[in-house]
Image 1 (tube, one colour):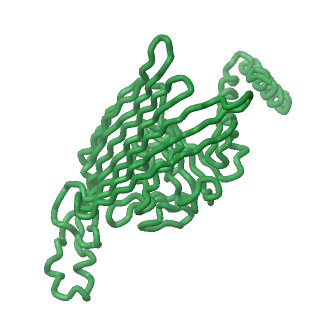
Image 2 (cartoon, rainbow, N blue to C red):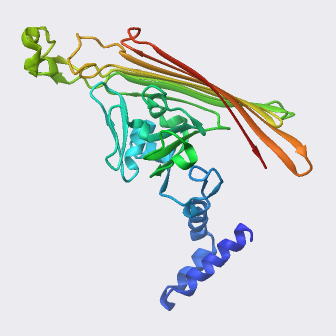
Image 3 (cartoon, one colour):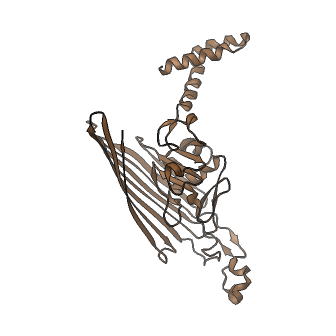
Length: 348
């Protein structure tokens, strides 16, 4: 059944239950005024996701609590990043720990090293760090880059593996769009970004790119008494405290996403990075006045994919990926690096 027949049947059923005095409005509907609204409704009902089962299906048939947020709509509601948009999902509470790290609490579950209770994907690729099970660079992506955010509230480990105890977040970026964007705000906040597509007339290949960079000094609050000042076990060290002083809430974010497609083959590059100040201090002791970056996370992902016909009516979709993760505390004091390869294949 095509879309026009569906719209006609839907409109006919709707009119049949209207009282007689409202039938005069049906003429306006037939002229196309309300048909646009019905078309919009059907578009919502046709929205599909594969986050719950890895098999694409309509959102209203997914066996789980799935919420789909649209980037442009979240911007219109006042959110600026993926992390801020998540507050519109019932049961999810975005929060910040005392060192400035992003957390995602699901139904009250979460903690300093427990944001890994949420599996965080970027265009279907897992980005949870092995060290802390977090993915702050993905959560700090500006919504100008985002097509939609798919969220499962509830266990997803059976499908997505580790870190999916409380839920799954899949952040999907925009493709096939040509635009640039600039934003400025309070606390010395600046954002710049660009996205586009390169394709020859023959359409034998295509290259999508999507990049952004933003930073802010944050709202530096006056902090009177820190953990060092209030803890009597430190003895005479109270005199070494930097309180009263201001918190370090600086934040930086960088991202570059590229996707190259040639026939049945593709190569995707994802680089996301963020850095932030230590807010109330790494060990809850206020640092010396400093507006720079104390923590930095970097993710680099490279994925190749292809489709091969191995027999009649049988095709093999294969992916080979490599990811590198780097984390540094106080810029260089405690660096951590991790790399891994991943291979997956599926017969169709």
